[in-house]
Image (cartoon, rainbow over all chains, first blue to last red; front, top):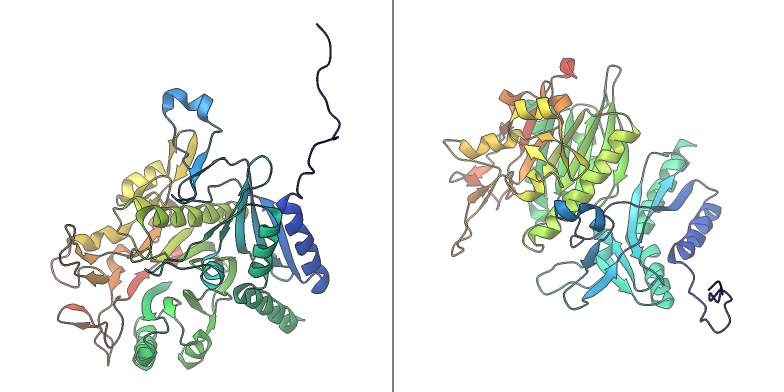
Length: 177
Length: 274
């Protein structure tokens, strides 16, 4: 039986959303252009855990088969979101101090891109996220579609914290010139 | 190199204390010949403190609201990682380079143990990356860890892996856990746990009514990589309680009304051994 049963054309298949890292990449390029490439934003792959609930310890006897399985739930009321496959960090640096890094957020997704987990830096989260009655700031945000992510990204990039970081880097760069 | 860390508690709610704390800081800097000052919850203006100190200091470039630092102009310091809850910098002199991590971890008031452990894990990953990028294992970490030295965030090989035994740390250097090599730190802060007289550690909290109440918490800690153990002067590790004109304790506990609920932590690195 050698019949090829695979149907590889896209007809009838809903269009996939833009990969979240591509959305961020556009903003990275725009920042570079707007600051004459003095301030750079980058999005890179990240290999570490980005939430406290990601389990990495495995039973020694099943180590090989479970090595790449990572399971975590973000918050109890959101439940499981399955295995995370792609994780990125979005950060700002400067051509003037190339070793400097301010990480704005992590983001992580599985097949299909959404739901997308975003983990914000503390001060950004404090500014744009909700706090509970005890004052705890929630760093994690879940975006269920591209539109939600774009809205969140707009808030994050426009936050006072990010603006402050960029302003201080520009100030330093200007003083050095 | 003389290093001082203090969580001053000037977090916007206690601005009235700023004057006393700043005067106290200037005396501490002078009396202890401080080269590097790291402050948590200090919003009184680090630039101003630099200018008012007798020695020549300049502030570390960073944007964190939780951590500030300033260093003697004899040293060159470069910010590598600038996050809200931690900073990682590289100090360079003519004879050595050193990586320093400065931490103000999330508090137990608002976050659970897992949150705290995870934050230290993220910090440690960044620290290890900096060590690799700059080929430097002369690493010291200081700050308000907001956990005790015996908690998982400190001792777990997945987190800081900070062990209280010099010989084990300098001989083993790292351990292999599930195919991951986990580098160690030496944690001398444990020594405070066996003190005979108060202040026993830098932070006091009477959790009256709770089943577990330590009263004194060694939240403010300093840890060093094996490569810096010889340079770390254990005899000089100290909790500062007084300066010429300021008494930071009252009834044997931190005077949190006039100063801070934390006491300053002082340590020394003998540079000839770096």
